[in-house]
Image 1 (cartoon, each protein chain N blue to C red):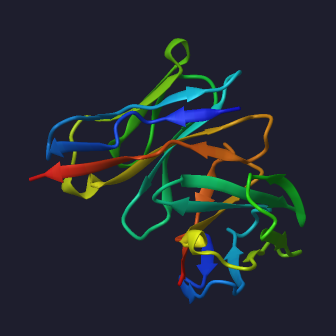
Image 2: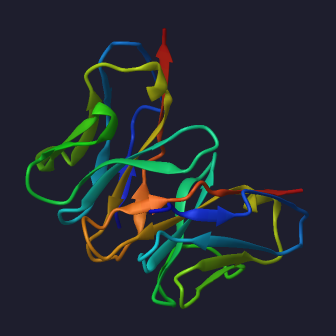
Length: 113
Length: 114
């Protein structure tokens, strides 16, 4: 099976712009979670989608949003970018069978100038 | 709320020596526990997991971890380290009642000396 894919791998934006990141989960996986990784705050949970519904949300401002499509692909959007949004954004997918572990993609490196 | 502490930010170990990475968690019930590894510029790779049952779990790349409920710990071990084990290691806890949200520790960076 192909793993979790994320596009683009790298992005450079300026403050005030918005950005959309994409994640394709492992085939058959219906749960997609997003995490932000920064040197200062580490790995933090953003939100989780399951069958097109947001099932859980972390402690991030409303500028961070997401959605999931019927094919389980997910996008996250960050509006009005701030310098502090520079981070590695990781997507993880989880199946409904097995041990429930999450499989991570390679991430999207976002740099805000 | 759940939390994870990895007390060691950096560990340097000689190639061929043993490695132990510490992880302590806080959670009111029996959690799901994971160890992930991250190489520079890469995503996270799952090394092993604990859900229930045998408290000593085996993972990939020769790693193992032991769940100790009395100490709220889930330490990762490897008997003999290879240069390719140099990476950052993250312990994570998942609350059974909170869906798929993972709470991560701050990570331990492992350097391997030749």
